[in-house]
Length: 598
Image (cartoon, rainbow, N blue to C red; front, side, top):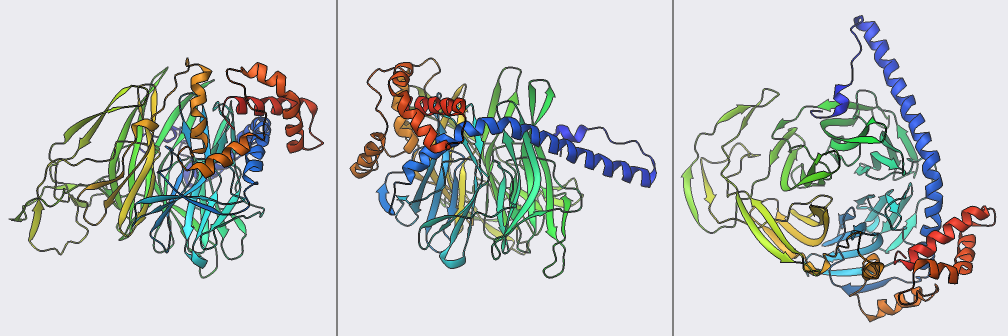
């Protein structure tokens, strides 16, 4: 774990084999107790915050509950977002986008909308389905092929409009793709509420690892493992032997063909001193394998030392599984943390990991076929990896920088710089028995997706799709809704399916007026251009609450409508809720509505 601060923790003094083992076991148990105490501490403090948000979530759900039928509407591309889920339909040429978040500089907007991208038609459809999961981001979703396809969703988080309070979900949902029905699976024994965890399908189980839970003052990261049986609908907490990953979120987690689970990298925070935290980037790899016979569960962690060229240290990268037993890592960000600020270096590169060979290599664009010539394969420089295995590492050609200016809706001129690698023969070949002659493809620089973090990936028919995500320029965040694809077999060029729309690049500075902030209301639902029918539905919903008068301040609005919001909060919280808590929640709901958060 090359740059992990945890790797620098003091090791016990050599006390002989038995002494070292006993000390190590005690240290492990002590760490578990510390983590458990910290989790209880965080839970107590965050519970108070989450109670405030539960009524807000319930209000959103009461609006969604008014949907009584499935409505399918053709629509433009979804509004910008990050930390959503993008999944390939197991039977149709479709991608499924669910949830996510958007921040405009002043407010955080959460989504629970569901979009379908038709690959052949290059078109989007919005699906309004009754009884859908509450709005969330940083959840995890996975598709399994049974009974026409199922989309399973676990966890994630909800944030208050000001981004100061968080609610972490621990619910499990399944979308039956054949019938388009959402179903919540309410069974005990599952993981605690969290976001940033990882979820994969492994044979007839869903495996969940890691994640974090955060309140205003505290946080805790996890390295626990849970399995949900898709046949019995029973949760089980796994207790693997061996040395596993330290607590983390945002790691890469994929399953191999033999049913093992691979974990790479991730991010966590560590307290340096009181009120000072430092981010920790993990670069280690582990394998979780069930070594039990037949139906016996005997899970074991083991550390992996992969050969080849690993990705450079980064967080918030995106992961998918491609053809040929290869997993794909795309993008991410490396943060330079200073005392008062964080400067991010964003990426748009691709790394492949060959699971059977335990081998990394960087994806190289070959460029479109513009000119071909035969050449004899030259001898390549052989280099030794850290593990002593030979790998071919030719000297890479120099990169090219492309600059493009985009004028956003508020008049900001954004210069997008893309560093594009020059055309290259593949640095790594999975098949060593190729002929001595091969085609060398020559072309000019190729446009690639803008470097970004927190993008959504999916693979269908050997094509990698990259949607959305974000990058930063100074203090400004740009959230994307563009869509690119690349053929993973050819690796010739990126194709732009949906371009970044400068009109969607809204950013409100903290000093901007509330009147300007009202422009963000449409971003919350993302339905501004979805047709008159949905506009009328939204206006009907908004009319359920006392409307905000033009130019009316929150304090004046609250004084005029406080009785209404008190009744709404009391109805949601029940008769046993304390009056002080009801009052606090009522005021929070009124403020969220008056400022465009509902």
